[in-house]
Amino acid sequence: MTDTAIARPETAASPDGSRLKVVAVSGSLSAPSKTTVLVEAIVEAVAQRRDVDAELIEVQRIGPKLAGAIRRTDLPDEVESSLRAIESADLLVVGTPVYRASFTGLFKHLFDFVGQYSLVDTPVLLSATGGSERHALTIEHQLRPLFGFFQALTLPIGVYGSDADFRDHRIASDDLRGRIDVAVERAVPLLGRRPAQLRPSQW
Image (tube, rainbow, N blue to C red):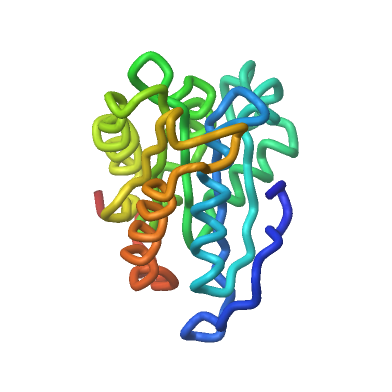
């Protein structure tokens, strides 16, 4: 999957006849990347259940254009386009490798530029990868509070994959595939609901 629509099997239309705009963000700083493979697999699982347009944003690719910016007006058009995609998503699928007990710095820097009220009630499916199962709680301790700040709707089940779940940058674990399926099944009933228009002054 690249910054264009993903290749996907034929699916039934969404209940209201619309296509879900799904934006995946990989916070990995390398390519190829297990994290990118994981977020792609999650999006593909959504696409098997709903009609979607999907876009992948890779921090490792836009990072050099992002790192030196202090204000959003400093950003080049490519990064600004990625921010607008994030802010207009019907579903965000975000993933990061665990780096020193947290998400990568450039992943956080990207979301530092997202409008404070742009993700209110936006469903966000959280995922992470790490060397072992010991890092799995990064989803709860780091990612969920970050998107809680945005008042996004973090979906009930996150997906964590350890090095043992991958082989040659492909998912090699039936358990991980199962966790993806469960997370997406729980997410689908919550997708496609438009929140009421709210004013920042309400907080």
